[in-house]
Image (tube, rainbow, N blue to C red):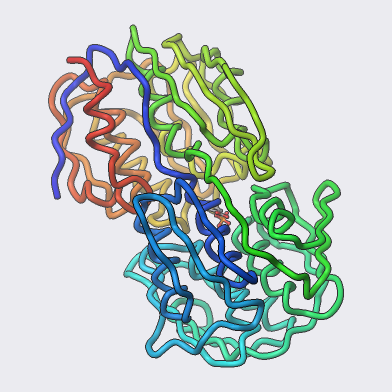
Length: 427
Ligand code: S3P
């Protein structure tokens, strides 16, 4: 699908966002291995989180979906059923990497595959710790999907993550659920802690001290009623839209404000953005609140080190903002961006160049000078949801209509993205 986006005179109004993708995956997986029913409200409408539900269904988990509420009947820690066919993770790295931790402990062999993009993403990062725990796991060329997991009893490990990855951390913790004893994970920098919070909600004993996480094996997980906050990474597109187009103001309700995700807000506010948190509360251990963002000139800046890891998913849209900022944007320590749904350094740079924007690309980052104009252009998501949405936002500031090829990629995390953007755009 191609999507035309015309320039905006401003964006204004409240924005409705899907439920948080990261949290939806975790709640569904833990509900599947808990005892009893769990009711998850505001479950993400994105295709990725439905890939997780599809895999769980194929593993024998009974569920009902009514709008964005999903009720799942838990089967207990090792109660999943052998799937009749290979499991399809679609485009979802979270599904394949996190679910593998659970599958490694089941008493059957399973195979998981994904689409073309997922088939190019490295799985050795989860294979290594799972093998240390005793799982037998094979992959194409030793590291790419499809992966084949011969499940069985696991032993607990103490694991130092070589890369900052919440997916890998989660995979190890989920495997550790079925092991007798303590599983310990050390992180090089603190990554999103939704798994730790959700595990505690479901009844696990887990402690987090700085970058060291300790999980007691074989907890009794019990079904819960849960509400998923709106997705801050989806909110990022609208925050940036309001900061890009003069005269804009946007409100976002019930958005997740977990401190391990909100580096985005700190960065934007540090660069001069006017963002007010107008309400905040705790739901299921997660912070949720309302945001009001008003257009203001943005200075730009540098994203590096632990901050890069903390806002890795937001870098494509921040790169767009950087080009319009006063001083531009430099991104460092972002080698991980090259192994996301696309090589996001390359796909961001390619689309910026198509819009006439100068960008210097490096192996682990990029520099985008500020005060640049966006030209109308033919853009391409290259099949990556965050690239589709980031460049839809850039198109609001272009000097004419833009067309985005493969725009339907947005549905991986935000199927309602284009109507939502249209609803708040004034021309
Ligand atoms: C995610 C972790 C991040 C992020 C992805 C979601 C998660 O990936 O990019 O969109 O839900 O844990 P990595 O774990 O590979 O950094």
